[in-house]
Image (cartoon, rainbow, N blue to C red; front, side, top):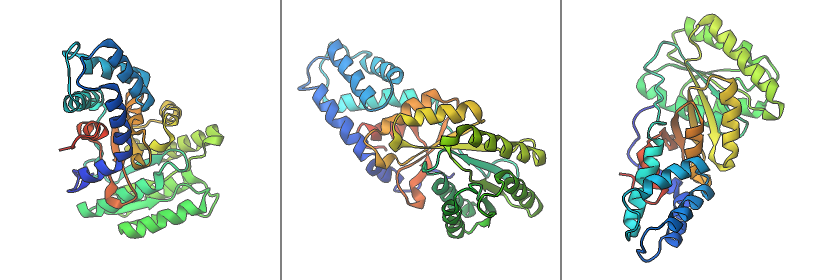
Length: 312
């Protein structure tokens, strides 16, 4: 995707306001009246970060970075936030990735995976809506053939995005649809093929078998396809996102993570342990339902916004 548009940092601040407010209130309670920083306060900070869903391992590392050079001296609220933002940003810096569907081979095949309700379809639609601005011809395949509502929602997004659309009757073979979609994309000169998938984790093995089959049939036409496999995670489920990352990450070749609905939770810090636990980078984050509310992940901007600082 392109660089964040004007106004994105403001939307990020607004979207993460519940998380930053919660963290700000806890910071104010932990660090009072510029008292000297001691081990008790560091322990309290670490507990606070864990409660904010940053995870025990990340919380310990961030707390250690935060305390470097400050132990035993008084610090004010601004320094606390700046130091904490820097520590969180350093924790996330190596986990920042880039999504660019226009820099690779044609057609560039992107597979969207994740549980039902995570925001897969909406994420696909937002990406599709931006691509024609770069001159790309886009084909969308409605691979969640088990839910008629998902197909209908995706068709609406396709029209909004000025993208072509392929679907099959409810219950049809998703892998067969994916194969036909790639055949069409290759034959008709499409630049990007975006493929939605089902997400029925209650039938985990059946879902994984279906995803593996989709990938196998794509590779029959293009050994490098899919060129990108994006795992879409919902921030509002908290640490359950870690379990989902583990399921998909261990069985499917995930190349990037999209964290959605960061505006719907006071624990947006869950992005931190997900980023650290995954072998794949965080590439995109979403803080709303609007087309422009999905943007490239910027570790520094995210960290500063999370603790209540200006992102600029």
